[in-house]
Structure formats: structure tokens, C-alpha cells
Image 1: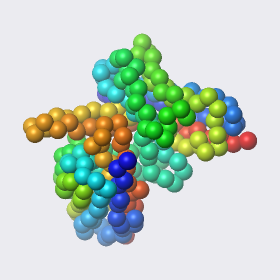
Image 2 (image 1 turned 45 degrees about the vertical axis):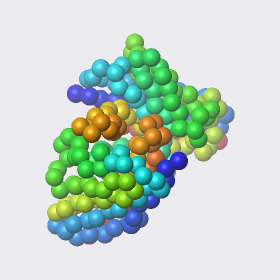
Image 3 (image 1 turned 90 degrees about the horizontal axis):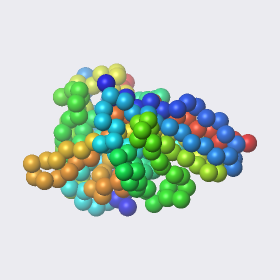
Image 4 (image 1 turned 90 degrees about the vertical axis):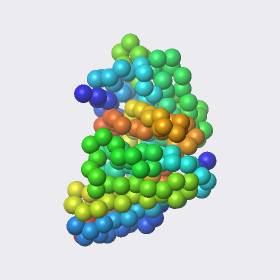
Length: 108
Length: 126
């Protein structure tokens, strides 16, 4: 099983600033990585797939990068509505999808 | 508009059986894999398995194999998640999600879950 490790566990950033979230895979997953955002009481929402491709309707403030084992999600010009838990998910082995434990982003 | 509509809140006792549902609309239901995802209270999502509605091909994550049954009735565009004997540890929110994919110019297939149901809260308590 591919283990995904996210850091930090919690991140507190001021509105208008930039948040940098990290995700590390226990083995190479190439670029087969997605990022999801989840707000309380809601299902996860797809942000990024293919490590860097924004999903439909996702603003350019959200950008993903990385390949192999190290990945980054950057959210720029932070807004209050960006407050959520962010998960990275690998899909290198189809149907054996695994996620990290998440990064909780708080907007100060 | 693509929608996945899940059945409502369930409160059950340990040992009881349960079948929850996920009905798709607004797209060709038989042509997309459907996943079931568990989210324990305060925890992150966990994929349980996927099913292809056209031929009922089903794949389970090993930790869920034998613990649940995923099925589908394509005539009514509905996927199911079923337990034969619930445990307190099954208390969770359960989501269904549509799997889509993209083939990159480099030949890699990228899977992603673009539409989600609203979730079914299952509480198992004596």
C-alpha cells in the first residue's frame, strides 16, 4: 500500500497570503496525484488531478506541482472560504486509492 | 446536471443488516465507475471499492473485502453498499462518487472523482 504523508497537520494563514501544503508518497506515484478540499458537512471536492491539472471550475489561485514522491499544493490570495481540510490522494495503482491524513487550513 | 443522490440517515443496532443507495442522474450511468468512500468521525476519507455499472465488475480495497458488498442495478441507475451484520465500528458517513479519467498526451491515465453524493450517515449503536 502506498502511504501518503501530509504536512503540516494544521496551517494558519492570514487572508490574502499564500498557503503551501505538502504531500509525500512512500513510493513513486509518478504524477498520479489528486488534491481534494473538504469543508465540514460536505463531501470532498476535487481540486487538482495529474498533480497539476485544475479540475473544472477551480480558480487559478489553486496550483499543484510535483512528481514521483513529493507534491505541493499552493493556494494564493487566501480567502475565508478556503478554510477546509485538504487531502492528497494517489491513484498510481488503480482502485487502490489511498489518501493522506489531511492538512487543516485555517484562515486567521 | 450530474447528480448522485444518496439514501437517508440510518440508525441501526449491532448485528442488523443494511443496504444504502446512490442513484445517478444527468449522465450515462453505465459508463462510469462508482466508488464508495467511508469517512469515520473526525477522520479522512477511505476508499472502500468501486463498481462498473455496465457489467457489475467490482473491486474492493483489501481491508473492506468480505466486510461489505457493493452492487448495482443499472436499470434504475443505482449503486448499493450493503452490510450483513453491522458493527459499532461501521458508524461513519458514507459517500458515493463518480470516477472519471483523463488520458494524458504521454499516455498516462489519470483517475479522479468529479461528482459526489451528499453522503449517508450510518450510526450503529445498541
